[in-house]
Image (spheres, helix red, strand yellow):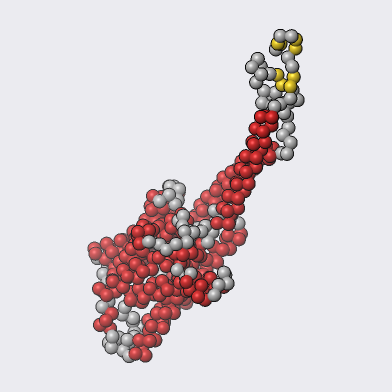
Length: 441
């Protein structure tokens, strides 16, 4: 292009171009620093979780399962020895369960007193004032009744009603029939997991849970005594059991008020908010069904003040063990899923039956043995399915990280101290010379 008087003059870039380039550099530097701060914050709060296919995670889950199995077995044996036929069958199991839940409410506060004393090194007075679990959430504030009703009331009501309906059903049906019906809870759980988007809908997973449920039903198959109202109660309990464990997973994994990666603290906070309504419902069923006030002076557990204190000590001990056991269950659900927890529970039933055969000489039929074999197959199939899903998730995460690294490389080029001249003169701000148009721009 030519102008009057000869060739087109060549000039240096003006100051505005330099200032624009400098502002772009500073903007990208700020963007880079902000993104790094966000990444570190997400790591600290646990949003960037650990690899669930790693050995460390596997050891953690196995430890939680073994803790749960051990405490559950110890609690069962303790209850059988203390409340069994040798001392006289305890006439009010719902009273024990409800009282234990109420005890757990106070143990949650004790947990946070110890947490602030030994972790944060506070004085006892400060630790006591900070012992309200709701003050230890990310919101760092008291939970209003409205918020509590939205977050915790549904699962508390479902849990209490599950316990109540389960125990009331024993009045009308046998233990074998109860176990057969209650074994349908994994399918209800799977349904709610699909509805709440906790699990990806899959015919394969549904089939595996069906195999596990069939194995449990066959393992306890025997004489059954059908009763319509008892059947309704146990199916209601199975429905509520599936619903509540799905809801617990939703709270622990999706609750925005929880610090991510802090499964134990979150479990204590959840249990603290659930126990008042849970214990109230269970104690309500106890007053209706067991009428505990009529036992004073008549039962061997309440015949004298000494017996009453001894029984209270037993309840205190069993309630404390149950508190640790429930925390292990909650942490397991928070770290894995409610479906995985249910599968582990089915395996626990298998081990319980096996222990009964080996230790106590219990007899099982051919149908029971076939059911145990089917249950083992179902558990193995689920483990393979879950491991496959975890590997697929890890592969997707790896791809995202690769794309993130590409973004980082592109950003780094923009953050270089000296911006390299572009090969395209149209977009170059640092060419030694460029041509002005007729308006001098």
